Image (cartoon, rainbow, N blue to C red):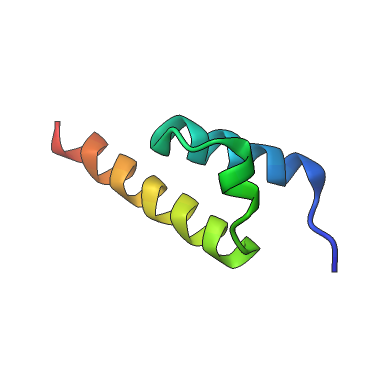
Length: 52
């Protein structure tokens, strides 16, 4: 199964923006780990948006 290139770019950009990790560090992660980090960041951002 392949993963769409656009989605990989979105995940890398999202994780790099929030964690300041390099593209190499992010791409070294397993897909499920990248998705998990992205989902956790999204939850934190959503919570922060409702607390203000």
